Length: 375
Image 1: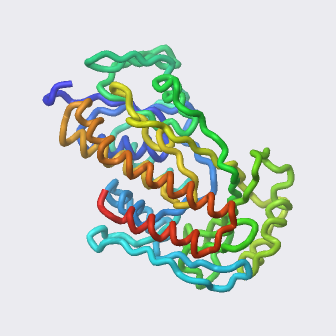
Image 2: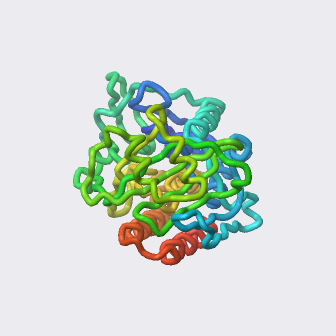
Image 3: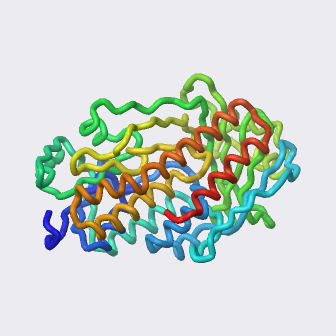
């Protein structure tokens, strides 16, 4: 690729990381093809907790106002005991120049609608039901063969195809596989009671319980459970979740009473892996969960995926050549992503040991303060 020629980029995966990369790279003038193996934009899971640094990234991406209007933004995290009593509040300040709140939440389907509209508005029409069957690189570019037997040549390939990335298996054949962390998470939407103005943690019990407002009248409830062996999805989700919540008081008790056979509950074992750097080979770069999957304890997985997109676009605009761009991207963002993953895993280990609430929240507070620093 010469500095005068418009770079042609293939993005594999139309989730949060892939859509963010599409939006950010289009702003640099790059030509972008976006594909996804699914038949359309699909999303699983209930809600998404958004930290202040993630809100800053969403502002830089150009979607903060929509997120604030259709989701929730506020300040602070309230830490409570099992009985619902108030223990302390964790501040979530952001630098004034960031022009965002320190905390937030949104339904995943809502965020997908916001990002997908932005993708379409920047002139990209995703090819759904399409995957990559072959990648061949040379010094000047990447030849890609698709599942529909079409082919393309690209200056850069960005793999945003998730924790089970097919691209990672093709380009990094020796990469570690995802492994179970010892915890599983339950999620469901619940009504947002009047007066609830922030995220909550309920610590000190057998499981970690929390909620995040995601709209004016809606929250999502999450329960992180220690299960030493990876277990299959329980057959009776509502009854099993109600049992886990039995010791908890306050509004959690009210939510427990509302759980019934028709309750929509998402259940997922937590997995991760650590991929040695750099997260690129030649002209193929892994981003998001394909490179640095994180557990939800720090609520920053989506945030660092959006940051991947922003940093990549900034470095491409600065350097204009793919090798220099990828080197600069790795030097600038890889350690920040590892910090998020390591901090999240540390919190999860403290939860599994049932460490005192102050030990768990100290990691959260320290990590959020560091992430508030400039990228």
